[in-house]
Image (cartoon, rainbow, N blue to C red):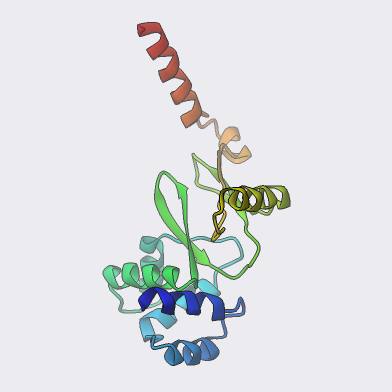
Length: 181
């Protein structure tokens, strides 16, 4: 029952996210747009394009707006809003989950600096086509496609931050294991 309700919600949500229309639709499907969820949605609607927030960042932003909302309410709300398809969950840096408004039907990807966490969004039709083809070949249904490329941005390089990437660490471990064998 809940899964069917969530699937219906995902299909009905439109990228415009007009709050009053969304509230009407949610109520019609048995969900409520609580004041807390409305404030969370409003925060995401007002973010600059390409901006992502963790639950902790979102909580701090709401507190700075004098909103009385607990961190646990923020976590529960972003989890529900993600399941409903309103928010998109991303793992951009070191396993920390970030969220963005799920406005675009097109899949987009991210370049993330491992030093300063600068994040740049990009779209790539070839990646999307390849993802669709792979899903079709294996009989899967594509729900989402996220590619996160870990990088060192130009600003971080100019500041002299080390550019040791996880790839370097993995290669070093493989070499060390080969030497021990």
